[in-house]
Image (cartoon, rainbow, N blue to C red; front, side, top):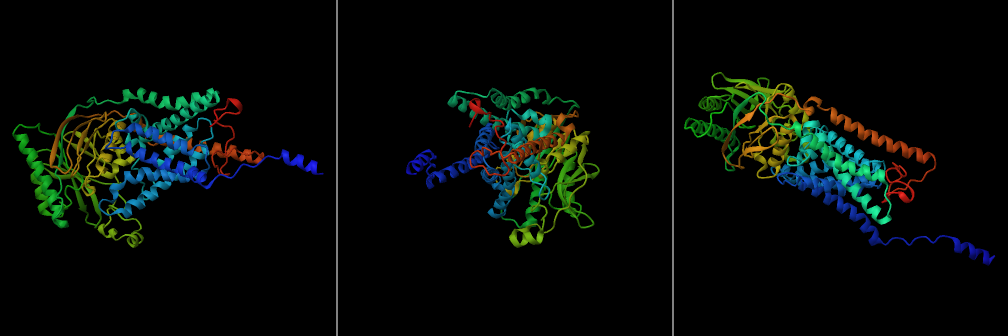
Length: 563
């Protein structure tokens, strides 16, 4: 009996020694640290820096963090990636009201990247997983641009690509297609490197998987090159000479009403200064003039002095002026409004901002928000939403209007073009954000919109940076921050529609369906495997639900790409 017992004991496998606490800690900290640093790397790819290409290694590192893990780990790592990206990107939101709202906004928005991270781990075992993962990222951006409170699309990947080689893709399918291409290329870069390292270690290579990985890198570049003919600044409908006014703002020392009056005075003065330069022959006479958002926070329809002051400035320049005002209607509703002011007829048409800013121009859940922050009282009355697209006819040119925050929303810019705009104006007021990166991030959005819809985009800002952007995304003139100035440029007018303009939300919808299809496929195969009693490989610390797709995308046997 002793001999038999000894024989059996010798054949039993010896369990591996438990990992040390230090090793377990390192195993958890490494991917967490990498996820945060990848998010910071993505932030560094955004304006005012021109390091657009950093988005590719950022998503490559995120791919390393997520591939093969369980969905719970994916959610956590996705959240950390979101924090690393959004904390520095959105720091400007706390310039006026402190760190509380900034941190709350980031904490909420990072929940979307957490959901995407969880989804990516589920599809990461499918063949050509970078495709499904990039589509999931696009779906996450689509959700973030719509909920809650109308959405917050700031930080869409496309908005960091104004200087990048993928920019022409904005004309193909707008910001969703441009962002999808960048993310696909980043994930594909990781997969290509992973397969190459695995092949070097095992001296075997799954050729199909390798070819797919290379295609996920090559196809976005090839597609961007193929889209170059869509990018044009030819004057299809002739040209018009525009003037952009930046009046600047007083920095300190004035109470609220005096501050508002001073901002109006500054924009009137800069317009009259431009009129004097035109009379002196120093600059060309503009055909139209664009003032920024909030250039008259004093309601010119209720204040006779403000009305007279604006009217005098418009008569001095002698051409139509789009004036940004805060206007209260007879029924008491408050609107952020652009007013078309004619030098002969006075104010004629108006455009009321439609996508108003939550917690800035109106307070959702006001009583609850007031219990959390005393700064809610700064918004004494909620603004109301406009209902119609804004297109002003100014000296024969049709000018579409997307006021400040609206430039971040695809629909708010597109429908000005589908309603006939030959150029676009993005009047903005960034003065409350001081010298933060906010104004540069918003300027990059306008450059993307210029290519997306093949239109000149003018960006008049109260305190800078104001700019004129050609339809190919080039900035042809710009101002310095907190400097009174004006820009005069002859710009092309265009009426042709890009594929992005024609297709609207369709490309984004298709990518969301791709994401849903990938998730459905992965979950279906996982469920079938469990019913058959299969034991998924599980990857690195994978959770049992949702399960793996055994062998998918990684090959099997000795020829596997492994990893």
